[in-house]
Structure formats: structure tokens, C-alpha cells
Image (cartoon, rainbow, N blue to C red; front, top):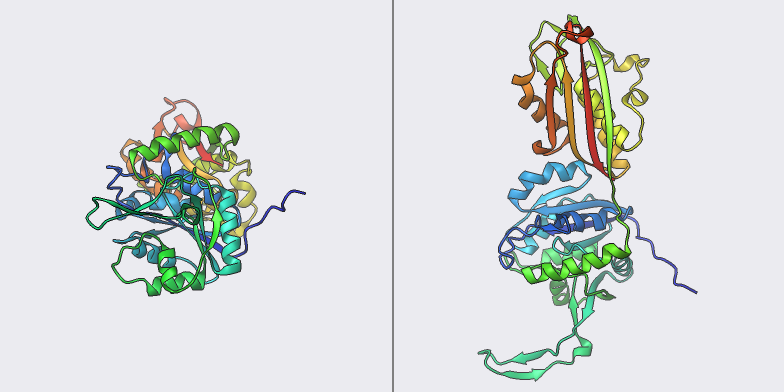
Length: 395
């Protein structure tokens, strides 16, 4: 009879340490391209793909936190600023956890090939015993050397040695004790080193050689070989999906003109139940379409008088909640506004920045442009403005 598949215990969180400087790699490794994507994307996906995690915390360098923090937050990750040492970074990640978390998995951002089964087993073992660490048998004979490094002095019993990996999993109170005990400013190789100093033991979780930590250029070659094999036996867990959106509103006097969350100086504004922001409406419909979640009128019906004049940024917040619930991450949006007046080219960058902020996307992933109708139809006569939008998401 096959063994019963374990499920993740309740109230679990993962802290992914991705703030290292990669001195041995010679370049930034967390965002190094690996199998067609930044390495950290693969690592994060290994944990976000396990639905039982209540919180996921990415600890990033100050530079990467500034560049990518908003994007990760939009995908449901918490973020924290890396410190000078591994333990300082872990303290920052631990501080980001909410009070209800009972079990914590601590993982290296440079281990993109971790097996979900290892994660689950380590969490269950930590729930039972307080701590658990994955490990693999050593292949080479391990010897001790003289202090000057000139001679071998002895041979260790290889059968009793394992190479420690991550995620190292702990009951919250155990990890808190580790962080309180660890000497400030000291650089420990991992958390279990401090655990051992407390006289506590971590359960052993058998792992595989593919859970490699990418530290040197040679490691990257080995890891890509493992990934190539893995891709042949495992289907991709996420797909690129696209959605299309369209909206049109009449221009009338006495209304503010809002496009992409930006108020534009013009004698007319867009008539609508909300603020009439055709750009955000089209973008939101495109995002909803990418995950087959209907359109904004389903969630904000025009018959609901309580939302009269509603800011479209609040509509976008609802759409982001829907995407998060469906575990979809926005990749990019592209919108084309159709307007005869006013001329929108001077406003492109302000609208881009506004949409970027509202959707919590990097600016480079937001495209805004405009076209006229050459005097044709309602739009060409300056009586309406419309917008077409396309959105891409990973789900």
C-alpha cells in the first residue's frame, strides 16, 4: 500500500533569504537568468505553489527591494530589507510575520529546484519535533587537515555525515529562541548551527542532490542540467494568459477628466457611474478577462447607487484581490486611449506612473499610448473617449 501523502500543517510561513551579494558568482545571482526566468522566480514559485502557506516573505537587498518590492507585493508576498549577515536578514524576515504563524520554513533564494515534497516533510517534522533540516549524503571521502593546510590528518566516517540544505523548518518559538541567542553581527552558516548550541536537535529530512545551492558558475551549469531533466518529467505549473478590455464614456461639461487615475485639465470630463476612468476600466476588464473572472460591472453594478462617483483606483484594488485569490501575477498591461481631445501625449508618463502605482507594477511593465479618430464618429467629434487594453498574467 502506498504511503499516505502528507499535507502542510496549518499556520505556516516561508522566509526566503535572497539578499546575498553573490561574491563567488561574480554577479547578482538572485535575478540571474535561469532556465529562461530570474532564479528567484523559480524559488518563490516552489513555495507559492503550495497553497497552504499563509504568508511568504522575501528578504531582498536594498537595491532589489527598491526595484522589485512593489511587484512582489502585488503577487501576495511580504518583503523585508536584508541585513549585513544571514542572521540579520532572517531577523528582518521574522519581524514581518504576523502573530498567528506557528511554523516557519527558512529557505535560500539560490535553491530554485527544491522539491515540494521535501518542504512538506520538513514542515511536518518540525511541527512534531521543533526543528527539521533536509540533508543529502556526501559522495566524496571527507578528511581533516592540519592547521597549516599542508597535510591530511584523518578520515571522517562518511556514513554519519550529511550536507545540510534548506528549507530549514522550525516551530516559531524555536526560531525566535535561535534569533535571540545568535550573537549580533556574527555570521552563521545556517540557523541550525545556533540550534545545536542550544542543545537542541533537528530532525533529518532526506533530500536530493538537485536541491543545489547555486553559488558558483559551475553550480549554475549543474542546476540547469537538473532543470532540463525536471522539465521533461514535470509539466509547467504556471501558464501565460492574456485578457482584452474595452470601455467608452461620453464627454460632458461639469465632470473632471480622469484617465489612468490622473486628473487632466480639460473643460469636459467623462460621464459615468464611477469617475468614468475609461483607461482603468479597460485595463481592469483585461485583467479580469485573463483569469476568466467576468468584467467590472459584475462587481460594481451601475444599479448600485452607493458607489456613485467611486474612484476607479478602488475598482482596481478589487481586481487585484481577485487576481491574488486566483494566484495570478500581472506581467504587463498595454492600453491605447482613443481621444480627439485633449491631446494626451504630454500626459503619457504621468498616466503610466499612476497605473504602475495603482497596479503595483514596475513602470517598465506598463504601456500607455493614445490615438485620434481623425474627426470620425462620436470620438472624432470630441463627444467621447474610449480605451482598448491588453493584459498578460502568469497563472
